[in-house]
Length: 263
Image (spheres, rainbow, N blue to C red):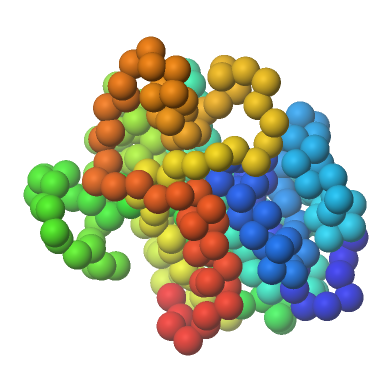
């Protein structure tokens, strides 16, 4: 259902922990949301989280394959002014690093840019890409306490290194880093009329918006908090800091509203 005003935003991976908070902030601010999901289960989760908006200011769009731009066709209309890319593969079990994690992450990221170029109308102005702060951290330089990171800082992991990784967390970080590099390359090559902003939060913690029936359903970083609550174990904090999920969710909105600093 298209809005009659120019305030529609596409949000990918809408059923995810952070994406639901992003959608919540968008709805509170007055935007309409076209939320992409990949399954009926994901659709039901979004519907149950926002029952008062579902079908009116919030619509879901089934995108079976994030790597294929044509799958996003129905997510865009002439009233769409921006997109927030949150989706990324998070597999509990990976048999092939390239096939199961790296390629879907990288091609899924560039896929939303291709779709924005093909299907967005003239009012479309920005894609906001979310990835962790680890995409900016060069592990060879250590923790560097007190160092101020800028957009010149990069995690220098290569695709070839990531293919051979055995641990899931470094692999996930590599997939996000490679995805962010890929979208900047895409922007340089295609030079679209819209621009790009990247948001790189540290460890995201905070409440879930959706109903949780079992801890087995929790795959987000918020699981670290639950591990503290049940006192079964103290999780190892591998990051330099943390940020509230609600604060993180506001950042993409700020990037959509502030176009004074392109790219």
